[in-house]
Amino acid sequence: MRQNDYSALTPPRLGAWSPSLSVSVVVPAHGGPHLDLVLAALAGQSYPEHLMEVVVVDDGSEPPIRLPEIRPVNTRIVRVTDGWGISDAVNTGVKAADGEIIQRLDADMVACREHIEAMARWHHVSDYVVSIGMKRFVEAPPLTPKQVRRATDLGELFDLSSALPSSTEATIEKTDGLRKSRNPYHVCTGPTFALPREVFHAVGGLDPHVLRGEDTEFAYRLAMHGVVFVPEMEARAVHLGLPAQHRDRERAVRVVEPFLAHRIPLRRDLRKDKGRRWLVPYVEIVLDVTDTCEATVRQAVSAALDGKLQDVVVTLVGPWSRLHDNRRSVLGDACFELRVMRELYAHDDRVRLIDEAAPTPSPTPFRYIGPVDVPLHRATLERMVESVQKDLVGVLVVDLPDGRTARLERTSALGRARLLAAAGTDPDEVIEATHGIRREGPDRYWPAPAPPAPVSIPAPVPTPPADTPEERTLLRRLRSALRPN
Image 1 (cartoon, rainbow, N blue to C red):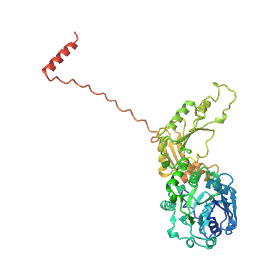
Image 2 (image 1 turned 60 degrees about the vertical axis):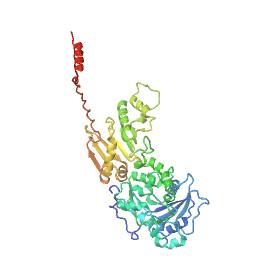
Image 3 (image 1 turned 60 degrees about the horizontal axis):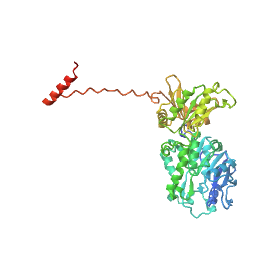
Image 4 (image 1 turned 180 degrees about the horizontal axis):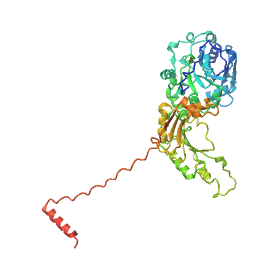
C-alpha cells in the first residue's frame, strides 16, 4: 500500500465470511454508569463468541465494578494496580488480553451489532492496519440492557437524526476515506479503534504521562511505526453524552496542547514559541564521527545547531563504548580525539553520543544522514523538509559533488519498510514502492554564497565657482598662500 491508500485491500463482506482471528475488546472504566448498556451491545455482536473476549478494566472505581447479568460469554474484570487514567487502564487491559486483535472501546459506547466484525475483517487481510470505528453523540435516553441486547439496529434505540456527528467523519469524507490524508492519525482519536496486539506492544502502548489527547499521541506513534489507518464506516456506535469540548471547549483545548506540543513534532502550529526545546525533536541529524578529528566534528555540530530549523537533535555515531576510565596517558591516548569530543558534548542535551544509529528515529518524524565533513548550510534542513512534505515522499537523496550523498528520511516510511521488508532486502526498495524516493542535486540545499556587493567610490565634489567679487578676491588670496615658493 502506498502511503495511506488501502485501495489494494478487499475485506470480506459482512456476514459472508468465517473469521479466524481472536479479538480482545478492552473497555477502560471509572465508575462506568453506562457499562451495562455497553456490555449488552457487545453480547449481541455478530462476531463469533468463541473468538471474542471482553476485558473490563476497573480504573479505581468506588465501589468496585461488578459485571452485569447481560454480558458477552467471555467477559472478565481486571483492575489497575499501578497508576490511573485511560492510558494506564488500556495498557493494563491489553497486558491481560489474549486476543490477536485489540479492540479499544470506551465504557460509554453502545456499538452496533456488526461493529466488532466490521473492524476485525480488515485485520484478516493485512497485519499492519489500524481500523477506526464511527461514532455519534447523543444524550443517554432511558434504556435497559435487555432493550439494547434485543435491538438489531442502533436506530431502534436512539434518534440518530438528531445525534451530533463526530468531526472526524467530515475529515474522512474530505480525504477520500483517509486515502489522500496527509496525517491520517488525526482521526484515530478513540474511543473505538482496533489493531494487532503485536503492533500495540511494538510502539509501547499508551503514554501514561499524557492525561488528555493520549489517543492522538498514541496514533501518532502508530503512524511513525508505518501502519495504514482505515476508517470503517459500517462500525457504527453511539457515544452516550456530549464530548468534553462541548462542556468546556476552552479548557479542553488548553489542557491538551502542552501534551501534544511536546510529543507530536508534526503539529508545527503548537511550536511557535521561539527559543523553546521540545521533548521530541522535529529532525534527528546523524553524523558518523568514527576516525574524525574533533575540529571537523565541532564545525559540523555548530552548523547543524545553528540552522534556520532549530527544532533538531544531533546524534554522533562512534565507538564511544571503547572509552574506558582506567589509568592511561592523557596526551598519548589512542582515543584522544574521541575523548575530547565526548567531553565537549557529553553535557549538551541537544547532542547524543551512541555507538550505532537506531533503525528509525521514531517518534522523531525525520532523520538526516550525511557526511560529517560536509557541514549543513543554514537553509539545508528547512529546504529538505519542505521538499519531502510537498508530496510526502519517503526519502530525499541529495547527490554531492564528490560522489557521496546526503539524505532526509521520513520515519513513517522507514517504519513501513521494517514491517514489510524481508530479511536481506534493501529497505529503499520497499520505500520506493510505498512512499517514493527522490534524487536531486545539491545547489538548492547547499546554495553558493552570495557574491559581495560592489563597492562604489563617490566622485570628488568640485569646488563651486565664486559668485561675488569679494569671494573671488578671497579665493585668489587662498590660492596664492597655498602656492609653493
